[in-house]
Image (cartoon, rainbow, N blue to C red; front, top):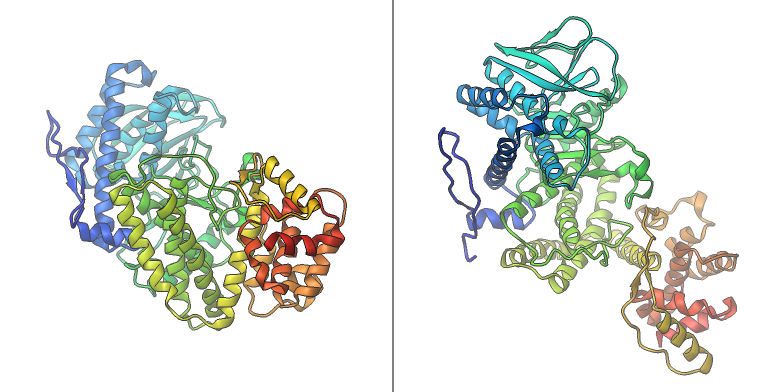
Length: 605
């Protein structure tokens, strides 16, 4: 892959009718390198979009082949009418129909339906999932202004039109799925339900009403594409279909205000380099909806965001408290979209090893190597975002940015080293990791205010030590041999591979890390062990941690990590303990509290 790494995918030529033409896509080396370094010009991102279009058409072709082979999959719907409506719309308005097929709503639905057909997903009646193709055809007819008569899947009184909105029929709502007749003509659509008269709307420009809920739009600037704020589409979540959840007026107003300020912030950064983002390249934001199974999340729900490779440039986001947090999240998730699109063109890791063993500084749980690659790519963008903020006029924001830039570049470089040494990368994957490493290494040479740099280094160590104590354990044999060596006065035994602790998933709050992020310690919290440690009083901090560790029950990993950090601040020669803190935790199980310091010094030696 010296300058032009090939990525071959079959691409349907929409100008053909009776037969399909396929041609390879070859990504120019310079465009690959732009993406691989963490950034991407408009030309590079457009190339990724082209690849996504090819993939989308291939998946659509697979679905159509399955429906041809088994028309009963559509249940009461008519496959012939659906395909005719789609063809007629594409012939009259190829651009808008192409945009519709590339929309996140169609991408998520299509991938979900194919997983249903392959037996790897669940959902409503299968005909309702497959029958969403009829809703796609109806939306295409609306865009093109063509005529079509179709049966559409309805959930209770709701009929979804992808990327347009939702028709609300008269009568009671519910979760039952049934087919309803619809006619499209001249940009209008009329849908007939079992209760009351039909509903006619003009989806492209009709305002919200009792019978029509349009997709919300967030402006990105004069003459630029708007971003959808989607609270309606049944396939807007990452997994199974979900019911609509319309935002209230106050929540909608808050999103508009946050997004407007986030756009202004992102415009200051340009957009092509790592951490930059052109807001108009985002397709959709889905406001996050809390669910019962979210209790074990490895990230805080207040900062939750997620995306899927099935829906390019779409992201699920819990509404942040301020525009800076929203801008950071948009950068983060668009990075995931870019890497997901690149992975559709190139294999980057030779083995898809899914054992969750590796440290990811931005999560509470261990990660597998593909997830680690995604995290590293996303946080190169996050690091670049905070680097740009170090030049902001606002002093408080600038100070926080200096800390976060210093912290994230250290943490991301650590993960890139893990990928370079542990992952079996393809040639393209090696090129990607090399370019990302070059970006971060360049940032590591940039000066940062000494206080912020020192706090960032301490915060990075603190998080890693606590993560290891929460997620790793010594094997029983190593623990027993350590205890025996301590009792006999022998030298400590060498360490083996740690064990990942089963069932220890779930988010833990890095309270100490939050204290490191503040330039000045909180005077009201000065008496806590964490505050004493962060303020530079390790002797008092170690005593405070020790008092908490002497209580009943298993040692708190947060307190144990704090005790060890305070101990190594007092005894810098013992810092090697920080590399394998789980060994000290195993040893201290057999040591009375009064001798912990002596045991730590013995183990470090």
